[in-house]
Length: 275
Image (tube, rainbow, N blue to C red; front, side, top):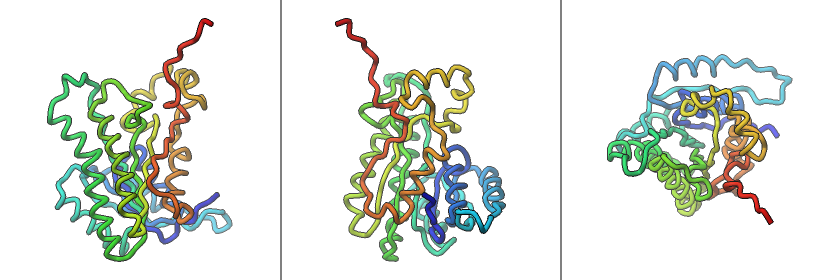
């Protein structure tokens, strides 16, 4: 199914690379006006050139591509800075219909006893406080404009009880918090016709995992521990769900944490019975 999102305005955080970049490109291809945000302006300028160079075949099943604008945004900034960025983004296309909270950091792999407060706070600021503040800033403007909206937060299977990761204390806790944040926001924002959902992503190639995906043995690992036998491909494995949640086809869908990991988090440690 091709979702025609023509006219939708979407703000994507962490759009300079990895998952955010792919989401920004695919949303543009499907007719959205996209506000791509991140800290690194040179990468955003390159993304803007790529997205605004899309050609269009009128005989194709895809809508005419939208346009992509860029905005520098550090989601770990304070409330006032994030609100100001949301205001600037809102004015770019005269509103925002969809917010994709994608920016995130993992941090180093350490024992919980070795984590320091600065690392903890930095991870929480980006992965949990930032999505809350930006959702608040955009949500207030949606409410004031009586504009229905969709909030989509990209979290991680590391935030699920069935998929805890050793060595990733702050990352796992921040993503679990983001999953719960999604449900509470959905409960309270539905009356304003604003839907809120999260996508708990498994392992996809991104800036965080590039080094791991360079390992020649990684595909063999997927065949052993992922039920579908492979690692995720951002487009279409993740983008297809984002397109659905951004569209009016999901107007009755809110408060969910969708797990997109090929079933990896379902498996426990394999213990074979000798009986």
